Structures are given as structure tokens and as C-alpha cells.
Image (cartoon, rainbow, N blue to C red):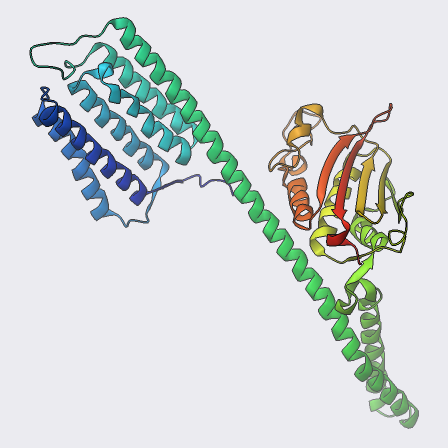
Length: 437
């Protein structure tokens, strides 16, 4: 889940701390202007406005626990208050003539990082409306006694334009950065979940194989004893049918255990390494169908020499198998008739290429494929209705790419050339991190 539809990501203690900083800054600014510079400041009115923020902080701290997450409307209301409080101070101290008018950007930036976009837009409009009001209506800017400073309207409009640009740019930038950070965090969490699931499945495979090996001998003994009892007990004995049933069930258990150990090289932890071709076949097995032909080839590179030409073996890593399998799945979904999975190795490393004869990667998303929530699947069905089940979120390829890169691989994307259509995904490992030495 990327966002809570009810609560914001803004915690109460965060906004309280930010407001205390603002209160201290405002007190310091008024003190310096009035006491150090000797300019006239309506201290009583300014301190009243500042005191409202201080009392609001005290009320919030007493009413709620510090870790309380604010609801979206409540957080928006508090940020609107901050805008209005700052606007009141600016009204008393020169309006847009006051250089501290640029602080109107701060509440909008906080909103962009913690609230939905629509709330940020609304807060931005409130801030700009307040700034537009301050261009025309405000008290004189504190200045040297006996001199009233009135800046030209062109300067005020320029300051207002700068505030508009700053609010828009910084707000959108903070919102976009926060959104990408949330998406990346959610995608990495999904990757960890998938990897943990694959590792658990691998561990269960090993336990099943070990259990089958350990139970084989006692089951064989049970079958042997029941056969002898069948020969000893006559058919008219009431126990004869029970013994026959016991033998049948024991044989059935032995058959089940034989199925568990049918591929000991893939499931037994004592055979943790498999050939490159076996790894590719295991990755592609769930996606074999009559519609799309998946062709697998594994051989040393043509230019390789010893030891590169030895039969290559790799460690059976669930993350690698899942990653390659996911790429094969994507290729089979977009392919017209075939997917070619080829592996070549030499003294330098191993390269696996998955190519299909589909439409290829769209040029407009080629550079972003592999990022979370970037998908090449069509967004609409034939009747123009969004099909969320078929479009996907773009996490599949991101998870596959992340798992493969964690194993030390480099993943490259390209489209076929020379008049052929289709996508090509190349996964390359240095020999030291993937192949047996």
C-alpha cells in the first residue's frame, strides 16, 4: 500500500517542532529589528500573533500523544493556520516588502512531502492568495525612524511572481521526490517479500527431500512385513482386509516420497549446484504452453577456451531463478509465437539472453523500464475500460531486476534490429560470482 487514504504521513511531534522553530525565529526577528536596529515594530500585535502559535502547540502537545499521526483534513487545517499566522505577521510588518515573505513556501513544502497532491495544491492556492492580498494591503515596513519606505508596485509584483514560481517549483519537486521515495520503498519491500518466499520454498524443497530419504527405509520395512502377513493370514481372516489396506497405503506413501525425490539435483540441499541449462529449464517450466514455444539453449561461447569450455554449473539461488523466470514470463506474454532463452559462458562469465518476437519495448519507456510502477502493459481493454488485473503495477520486472542485480548480475534491455521485432533482455554475471570454479 502506497498511502493511507485517511491519515497523513505527518506526525504531531513533527509539526509541533517545526512550529516551535518558527515561533523562536519570529521572536528573534522581531527582537533584532526592534531592539538592535531600532526600527518601529508593532510589538504588541506581533507578540499576540506569535503567542497564538505557542498556545496552539501547547494545546496539541497536551491533547494528543507525540507519535499521533494527523488525519489528512486535520494536518491540512494546521498548515492553513501556519500560512494565515505568517500572513498576519507579514501584514503587520510590510507585506510583500518584507524579505521574510518567502517563508510562505514552507507550509506548502511540508504539505507536498506529507499530504496528497490535491491538498498541496489547495494550500498553495491559499498561500498565493494571501501573498496577493499582501501586495496591496499591509502596514508600513519597519524602517529608520522618520523615513517611510514604500517600494514600487513593480518590485512588489516581482516579489509576488518570485513567490509564485518558488511555491510551484519547490512544492512539485518535494511532492515528486517524496512520491518516488515511497514507491521505491514499497517496491523494495515487495522484493524482500518475494525473495523470502522463494527462499522458504527452496528450504521446504530440501526438507521434503530429506524427509523422503529418511522415511524410505521404514516404509519399505512396513511394506515387507505386510506382504509376509498376507502370506501368513488366510483370506477368510477378519484381519486380512486390514493388512491388505495397510500394504496399499504404505505403497502409496512410498510413491509420494518417490515423487518428492524425482529431481534430487534440484531439491536436495546436498546438490546445491545445477547446470546452467537445468537452472533455465526450472525457471521456464511454469510458463511452457502450447501457444508460445520457449526454446532453451546453453553452450560455451564460440571463442571460449579452457576452463571456459567446461560444463558450467551454478549455485541454485531462488532469487536468480525467480528473476529469470519473471523475465521469461513477461516475454511469453508479449511474444507472438516463440521465446528464445540462450546461455553462453566463457572464462570471463555467464550471459543469459531472453528474446521474444513480440512488439518490443516502447521507445518512450525504454529508459524507465525496471523502475517500480513502470509497466509496458496496455492500460485499457478492447472496450476502453481500465483492467487493473491485466495491466499490473510494473513491480514484476522491478523485482526480477533487483533480485538479479543482488546476485551480481547486470541487466540490459534492447529491441531486435535488422527488420525483426521483439524485445531482448540480457543478464550477465562475472564468472567469480555465478559459475563454479
